[in-house]
Structure formats: C-alpha cells, structure tokens
Image (tube, rainbow, N blue to C red; front, side, top):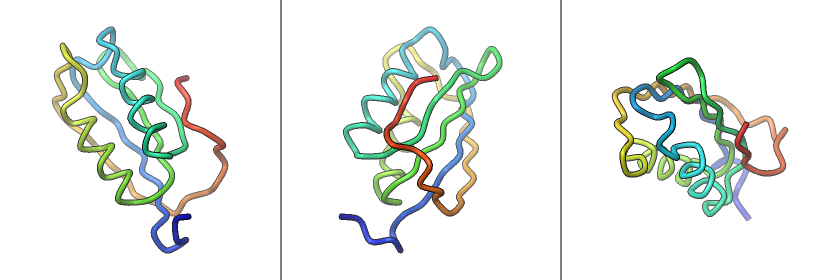
Length: 95
C-alpha cells in the first residue's frame, strides 16, 4: 500500500510524433503495470494528453518511459503539471 504522502497526480502534454505509433497503448501497458490510474488520449494532430495518479516515484518512472516512447515515436516536448490526487479513477484507460 502506498502512503498518502507519496500519492500524486501528473497532467502531461506530450508533443511530437506520438500518434499512429502505438503510444497510447504503450503508455497504458506501462501505467497499468505500475499500478497507476488515470487516462491517455490523442489531442490535436501531434500530441497526447495524459493524467497519471498514484505513487509519485511510479509516475516519474512512467514519465521517463514516455520520454522514450515506443518504436517509431519521436517525443519532442513534455509538459508536466503536478497536483494533488483526486482518487477519481479506478484504473488507467485509453480514451
């Protein structure tokens, strides 16, 4: 069980070649394996938007994975906003 003091929420916007390369499903697999909740969706033509909730260290590991992305992706820029978790999610989902 994660201590409440270690819980966090991160809202990301990832820019680059991140659509039609399996980025959402790659992130879903990483986040689910880490026990994180939240969602990922396409936003515009060259970005995805993500919300992670859970253990801050696990979120940081997923952000690191996102910076590399799946084969054929090219991440140009990652914007991250940290906040307090809301607990509104039951699992991590692709939208």
